[in-house]
Image 1 (cartoon, one colour):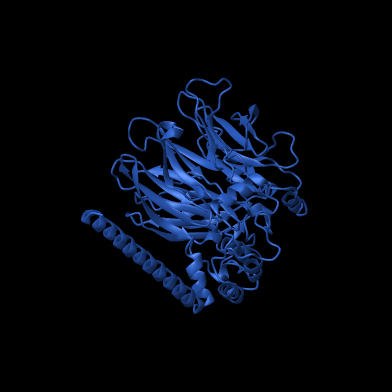
Image 2: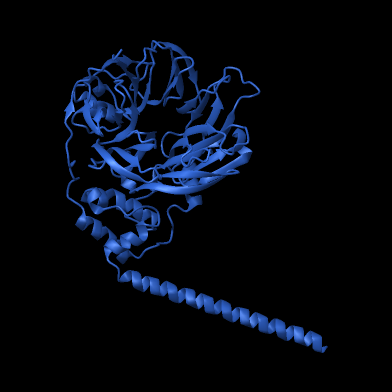
Amino acid sequence: MSTIKLGLIVSLFLGISVFSLKQEEEEEKTAIAADLRINYSDTLSGRQLAGQYCRACHLIPDPSSLNKATWVNSVLPNMGLRLGIKSAGRNPYEDLPEVEINLIREQGIYPETQLISDENWAKIVKYYETEAPAEPLPQKVIPVVTNSLLLFKAQEIKLGDKPFPQTTLLKFDQATSQVYVGDAQNVLYVLDNQFKLKDSWWVESPPVDMDFPKNAAPRLLTIGLFQPSEQKLGRLMSLEKTISPSAITIQSLHRPVQFITSDINMDGKEDAIICEFGNHSGKLFWLDDFRPTKEHVLKEFPGARKIEIADFNNDKKPDLMILMAQAREQISIFYNLGNGEFKEKTLLRFPPQYGISYFELVDFNKDGFQDILVTNGDNWDYSAIRKNYHGVRIYLNDGKDNFKESYFYPLYGAAKAVARDFDNDGDMDIAAISFYTELENPQQQFIYLSNEGNLNFKAHSTPEAATGKWMTMEAADFDKDGDIDIMLGSYFHNLSEFTKLVFQGVFSFPQVLVLKNEKK
């Protein structure tokens, strides 16, 4: 054997030996570090452990935000399943179809191996059980509500032959003065400016959003499955009787809830920004020139709910403000850096039980900077109780895109709020709806906040608002008389929710309630 070959063999052997020793050393270090973490975590309190494990996905929830029973019987068992804790009698796949089970398992949402020891999990449960109140905390201030609405006159609208309303969309087309009403039974109604039925469309799934481009057919967004799902059955399409060459068809969307258009990469072509709310998974993304082959993901988390477009930093490029719900609850700005690139700044963060549901940009104090109007009241998941932090909030902008809460109106189940100058006095009033079934006063599922100046508001409601469970709302000058009207859309998830109002003496249930502004 030549000296060169022998040298190569020795070098190779030494190299392998050194690599093997280094690999063993790294594995040993990893094992020691893991042991240290385990031993260290065993010394932590329940509060410290909650911070360690909860912070991985969302803000740490305060024990006082829910009552003991809700923590112990609902919220914590659900969290435990996500950490591999097998609670007796709990199966995360129970009653789910096979297709859903397979999609969830592919993502590893519920791990087979425990990520926390039984002892440490017991500490977390004990911490919340000990610190939580026996009953949900009451509202700190119970608002005084005047049960009359002199500015508006109510008109009920009933559409179709249905056992109870399930309105999923209200959208007004200013160009045609037509109102589009979406229904969970996969139908889209078209009303004229007198609120008479003009047309109807049968679609693949419940309609949830629309827009009305110039010189083109309306574009309709359908959600796919309305209930939580991992299936991608949503669709964005042109609403046409006969499909034209320019028709839009974007399929396989994961429970989309909103879309908006803008030339965000400034190439002269309109782009689509889509909120895929999803369920366990989801994303916020934009399509260059509406092309599915040119998808750009901005945020790959579930819960994308609402988008607003504005030039926040005055660099003449469209920026995006985004509301994310579904555990990682926050509002962020995506500053447009050009060439399709963005930089995110988180503005507001909320614990998962807050249930952030909607926001709008409004300059409340007339300082030239956009403030944020926010509602939080989503109560559908694991803690369907009264929450004293549900309501309507105003966050004022300091001029540098830093926001501070400056107003709060408590409203259980707050679903949406819009700010308009309804009384034409030069300042912004607020109309808000509650999607909640346990109100002692059902008429207060709609609240009108009249702006008295300096963020002081007087609350009003109307007896007619007791006739629905309001999930959608649109505000516009429907009758073209120079003032802003309001339209409310009612949605009952099941017969049980419907009968709760019957027991309170409500017997008329319109799909839509129009509040016609009588100012002019």
